[in-house]
Amino acid sequence: MHSPLARVAEVHEMLGSTQERARELAHAGTPHGTLVVAEVQTGGRGRLGRSWGSPKGGLWMSLVLRPAFEASHASRITQTAAVGVAKALWEIGVEARVKWPNDLLVGGKKICGILAESSAENATVSAKGRRLDHVILGVGMNANLDPAELGVPDREVTTIRSELGHDVDLLDLLSTLLSDLDTELGRIEDFGAVLSDWRNLNCTLGEKVRVRRFDDTIEGRAVDLSEEGALLLVTRCGTVELFEGEIEHLRQGEDA
Ligand code: BTN
Image (cartoon, rainbow, N blue to C red; front, side, top):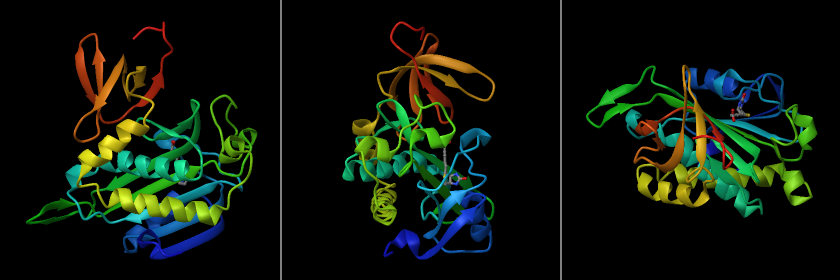
């Protein structure tokens, strides 16, 4: 596979989690553009410590990135990756929308999740500022699967197979995905352009939402993203800027 994001590649039939394997490789000094793929994960992880069902047929992968940009731009990675993943899905005929911060949905059902974990350990400080040592970017794509295989209620998840009515070649999908991720990550410093695509591809803006954070829940209307990709929420107490959180889109009539 010729991609700058797959300079080093490991493909496993079975692994606990590609995220953990990529982290091990990162600590051992693997270069930017290291790809770990597993056909099956026995301990796949989602955000907030949740487990992530990863049977055979999905595309389960993690990338080791060594960003050349300022550590303060780390929060841009999830939205930038979400734009890349959404574009890859559109290219294969799946009209996916980004639900802030890191989900790809089709008709309100999740088809893909993104997990960006950055590490400031060993960050280097130079005249150009502080650099992240590495970021592990995990992508879990429900591809050639039936929703029932994923261990979550069918109304919450969908798969490429259900959306297209046929399976896709996982290598072709991986190649499209890497190409789109590489393009989007390459323009992360021109984040205004990424955000403009994000606005066209999202399904969160304009929605009434409930956001769960570590210690509280906020409700409001999602109105925009900030210049750094934080969600701007208009609440009864004013506008709140959120960098993290689990959001639920509320139906019309529910409080917000
Ligand atoms: C989420 O929506 O909660 C993020 C899910 C991320 C899942 C992927 S699958 C490949 C990589 N390995 C993991 O253990 N998790 C990520």
